[in-house]
Length: 271
Image 1 (cartoon, rainbow, N blue to C red):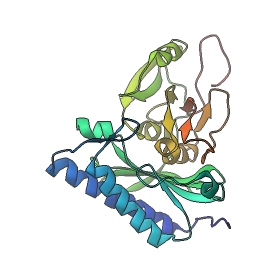
Image 2: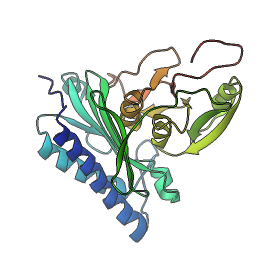
Image 3: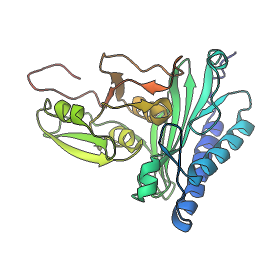
Image 4: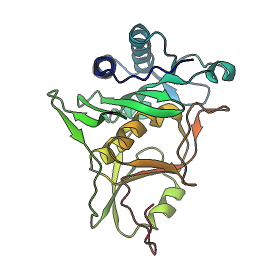
């Protein structure tokens, strides 16, 4: 399979537009319908908003780039034999933060990423409730688009704060996180749902996101693309990059996303 490196801004803009359209579908159901909940095989929740957003994104992207495969959380799983031939594909989470959607706290997103050679090269995160969008591309950097469609380039915080700003999940905290935080000199917690944690770091509003419980590839791909192209990094606890399109499953190891300027107790080395 020949890799089609997408650098055409018209295509990137169209994918951003698709994420916004999906957000409009989600927000309409969020505001005007009772939230219907099903349970998937792994006991995680599924709503009509997940399915409707998924169908819209897949149909639109298929027309935009018919030659590039699409893998989504809510769609048919491809066999390892099929996926092993992919050098490039779209990776989608049509409603990241379904629990936040159900709890109606507004902290859910639409995530679309492009994976090339098992690494994210482009990512979009749209926030339906606030009508804000983040995107990042390896050739162009990362950007924030506000609710008035004003766009500006963003980057991670590069100054040492008196207190490190740690962003953490509202739904997935555990004792490992507590132990990790005990090793940070001085910090404050910023809780956020879904992939918003990556956006906070990419925009310079937070400094570190330790994720010490399981995630799936579609949960983090768009966020990693935005973070990396804003000057941050995401590494496993063994100091390695995460590889996508895993052969066995789509589960990620624990990782730390950061701005590169964080220090632990009794250490002069960056995380």
